[in-house]
Amino acid sequence: MRGRFGILTHVSAAALLVVPGIGSAQRAPRPGTLISAQPVSTAPAGMRAWRVTYWTTSDRNQPIQVTGMVIAPDGRRGDPPRRVIAWTHGLVGISDRCAPSIGDGNFTVIPGLQDAIRRGYTVVAPDYPGLGSEGVHPALVGQSEGRSALDAVRSARGIPQANAGTRFAVWGESQGGHAALWTGQIWSNYAPDLQLTGIVAIVPPTDLARNFAEGSDLRVRAMLTAYTATSWSRHYGAPMSDLGSRSVQNVMTRLADNNCVQFNAKPKLGTIIGIAVAQRAIRNLDLSKKQPWGRLMRENSPSPAAIPVPAFIATGTGDVIVAPAVVRDFAQRACRQGKTVRFQSIQGGEHATVARTEATAALDWIDARFAGRPAPSNCRDF
Image (cartoon, rainbow, N blue to C red):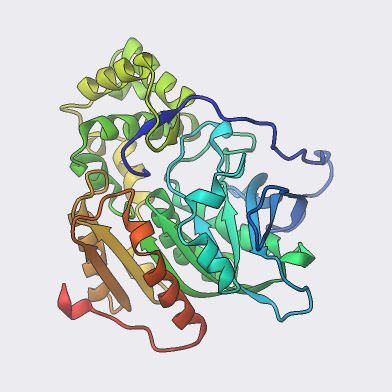
């Protein structure tokens, strides 16, 4: 869910990690154990980066190997452990080749990365299960996203040069905002060895039933439905037949399998036609009224009552993908639960722009949480 959709039709897989095999009879290491770290020679000046493979636990409590990237200042190893930011990315697709750690996309896509590195942070960027790794990508599955983010923070500690500490903040946009909220929701039970200082959730999907119904860009809504329905049909066994005829189902799965998300890329004619077919198929369809789809949407919607630390939540009035009203309602419900929330609605802000225009504000807010300053709340003002 990263801005207006263009389609990336080719991603080089040349930079994928070669992961050491581990026999099935061998017991999997603890979640967060680093498997491999491949230095990235193309990291920008002032940074060191590694493509990493590490162990996490799936939402079905099975040990799995996943990938990501760790980016740190090019500084001395003797410094005190660095503060960590876990960056959780927006929707890039569901194919393994769409993983952000393939190639150098993280260096340009992560908002404020240069600033974060200058401030001395180590940035950890998980791909999520099924992206860059084997298996289905469980799109918008909260436990899956949150566990892979927490274990990415743990894995960074296995790279001496990254000098990552145990204190971290999580910052994400779009699907990554959803992932950031879920990371906070499960943190204390899943990773009590880490210390979460704050959550930054930019244009996050929160109430998934409303998110699928209220986004005003109908083409994007059709593409998002194709991604999520294909993912959930494979991950949960939810019936694709609820979306239409066999030919419609085939169009949906081809759209999901063959397209990664990229800004400003011109889609091929076949993709344009496929989106039109999907758009017609969902015109009068409310999946939240069908089971198991509705139940799965509820189960994977983050809880405003489960925000354990201060949160910075932002939307833009021009967002046609994640409806601003849904984000605002989530923040208001968190406020009614007594949570410490700073909410911002950026006038004219679009889905693809808010994380970038507010990057400095987000980093300043994160700095203050690490410094132990009282977190501001504007719950009375919106």
